[in-house]
Image (cartoon, rainbow, N blue to C red; front, side, top):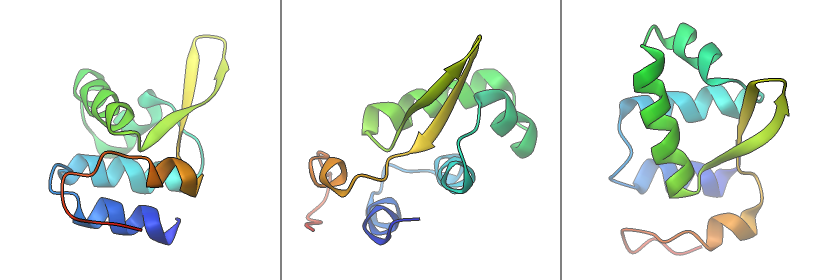
Length: 92
């Protein structure tokens, strides 16, 4: 996982436990919400809420769509990370 993204994740106070776990799983390879839900043992409705929050924060994006499945990935472009609206005084 990109060092700047890890610093952002670690220092952003709005990220909770499941956000961090989802980011770690998505950093390995693109995954669907269903896969994440079954991996963490959390209902898909709850995972969907966390995914929406992570997309709104600009930390994940859709990698590809296969049929009805959306595969998400962690953003890896540093320029996108630098454009994120930070809640603290973190600067890269």
